[in-house]
Image (cartoon, rainbow, N blue to C red):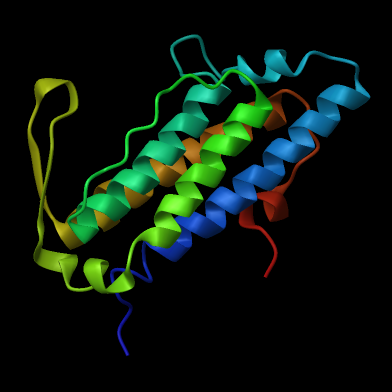
Amino acid sequence: MPLSMYQASVPVFIRHLRNLSEILKKAVAHAEERAEAPSLLIEARLAPDMFPLARQIQSVSDTSKGAAARLAGVEVPSFPDTETTFDELQDRIRKTIAFLESVPAGKVEGSEDREVILRPRGNEMRFKGQDYLLDFALPNFFFHVTIAYAILREQGVPIGKMDYLGSF
């Protein structure tokens, strides 16, 4: 049986959102152990022109829920980007997972040729569903997951590759 569009998207997003949630728990524990304000981690960034940790988490959420919705042909849920605490970031992840779990596999299946149109910064980008998932959505999702991980590693949070990959 070939890999389906659903299998290549929604369960992948959910798995790595859960992994990211666990990584954020370790970040909070690290800040508490060092008696540091967790807000320092939330505002941390790898370079001055890159998004801070909070915006990386928001981007992970936006990319995954947007991809699932577009592939399923349903409305993309809008979450305001107002998170400033780890609890709020965890809630954002929970809401994203809940939305992903609500997307019926049958609506995503067969979306390989569904037209997906994005309009970032006023520029129109057109994709077939499979190209959108494989060449845009998944790479973008993993970019922001990886940057969130890298920010926390750079800040001294004791996480490693298996935290990123999760348990099997």
